[in-house]
Image (cartoon, rainbow, N blue to C red):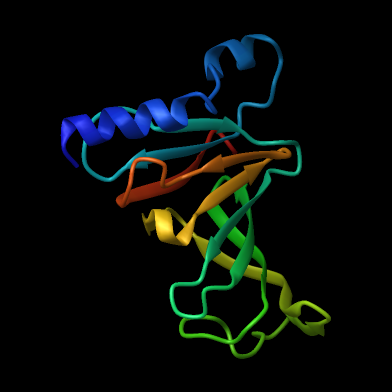
Length: 159
């Protein structure tokens, strides 16, 4: 990522970030979701996670152009996908639940809940057309404000 694009990405997302050191001094949980570009300098986003350590990643599916919502949880081993909800079957979306998971048809589409799918670090490509957004503790954080980019999401301090 060029330096100017990285700076724009940092500026666009930085307003949603938090001074983690200040939060820790104030007694907030040390478990954070760390988001940064795969190339370029600097931390893009450092989001303190709520006590349940869950957050939602939402995006428009690139083929079906319908919303997908994935709930993930941070722990000492990284990230764990807990739930996925979508309205229309499409490439890359699950077609059945794994053992121990629950598949459900709802009025809005499909849900797989009770997932235990471990992801150490989530590498992803974001694009404004897909509107990738993180929701953490009720706050939305758009990820593609500076245009297409490659990002990495990882849990920090969640032991």
